[in-house]
Image (tube, rainbow over all chains, first blue to last red; front, side, top):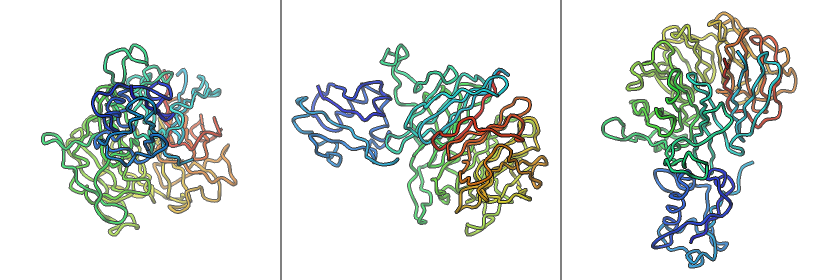
Length: 98
Length: 395
């Protein structure tokens, strides 16, 4: 099980709590984790990654173990702690605005 | 009439204001989609219980919401058909939020570039839905005006959207340039007498008309004069802020341009200025009285640099002659220290007798007049900045 922490507004959209879990088969990467998230919660398509380009939206960041992994390639392996379910893959809305 | 329902989009959510039959007492519901920008909420004329909303965020993109019970409950349209956490309706698939420019060989146009602020060419990229225009007779059909400028249509209740690509693909497209708010298609007017005729306005490209239900378009900006562009009378490039029409006179259009209030009596083929005695002819919204086709309303602000009312006095101006002669309407509106703005989609009328007029401000007030503009009162005073106001007159 992969643990994913969602920002407040996406919890509302998906009608779920702060943390969700998804099954991922194969390599544990940003892409495979987000694919699994969007498969489980299809209403989140386009909110984390842009619909067509599948690029991370500019004001969304990904953190693991207090480390910003937003700029890592989408097919790079995520840390073992995420793959083992010890630590969540955190989707964070950038602090900005008013 | 049993009630008036005002659909208010703001910077931090949507609100629904509902009156009694006398338009005296109002209830306030909301915020809907709290924390998100709600650019526009509009009900279907064919089914007032069906309402579409554009919920958008610089963080998480575009969401389309739909209500089928007059705004009490909302859902993202479309579903997998299987039961999901939102009940027996199944999960929305996310396709209702997908606005993909049509580049297909059969119906689309190549994804070209448009001018950017610095004069370079910039790829067309979807940002948000500015305006939703439901069909007058089919509750499943709705048009959407988006940034970067394009026109989309749904015929399945907003489950999916398809671009009417001929507009974006117009030969002038690479010359279109964004206004300060982005290259947005912000106004859609469906001719009530001719379902083939659609008007659109784009900042800062100008006004366009289709006479074949969106298959082809032509710019209709003859008569406009914009001193801030290299050729003040160019075919395109004008910063049109809003156009309005009365159902009984579909060939007469009224326009609030960046500067100048304009009218056309030939379906937009030619325009003439009717700013007349306005204290400033800069503004954003323009509206037509529900029962008097020559009675129109604007809310002047001082200038393109100073987006607030002249002299700090919030005044609606009414012309009963289709322009040129304007009367200030002030009763009940603040006449000192008022520095709010009223945005292009933030004024609307009801169809009751006498006609009600409503507008929302960037200061969060929603003002109402139930006598055609003679007297005003604030229904609410402290909402987030108002982006849009639409009105439903309930039977």
